[in-house]
Length: 259
Image 1 (cartoon, one colour):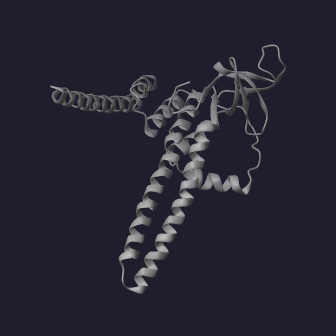
Image 2 (tube, one colour):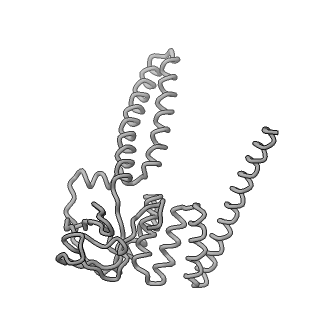
Image 3 (tube, one colour):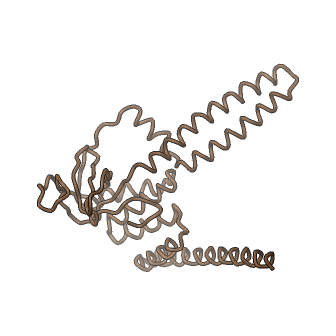
């Protein structure tokens, strides 16, 4: 009886996953059709139903970004393009459309010049998510192990030399990519970014309503969240300025939650 119950449970879980998959595919097709007909709000509704099922993807957020862009909803467009890139930093379409969406923002913030190490980090490490770097780790681990075994069981000196050198290189690359994986994982779990959703909002110098207003931000601007006090969040913008904003004015960039 227990065996039958387990089999029935497995079958039920399998059928449920298949149903979710088929349902999401249908919703994705519906969203695409609505987008082609310029029914952008209806397309958003279909895509958000997929998100509610927990079946998220870079393509899903990219499509959501396109719909909001067409409706001139700047903050929502940028928000979804950024989420698409969280899932797939190599999504060139999302990268390109994010540039266009940012041109619609009002705030012209001059970024602090990056160091050579920050530029290298952007050019190499941030090209992949930590999950993708983890896959690269596995590849180099398997490759290094195979090459070492070939070295161990080879009898020809030239082949032993070749397999030894290539196995050492593979293990060195494994260490480098492991460092990249840990670095990206730490960054993803300690860095909280957000998008301003208010048309215009004042940034205060303290987390109180009667504190001094030090500058103003507009929808679509990306900020770094540093701290939280009650319903206030301390933020930093790309030019280094910091201040406090009411939490409801921003949406945190996360693939696990919607606010």
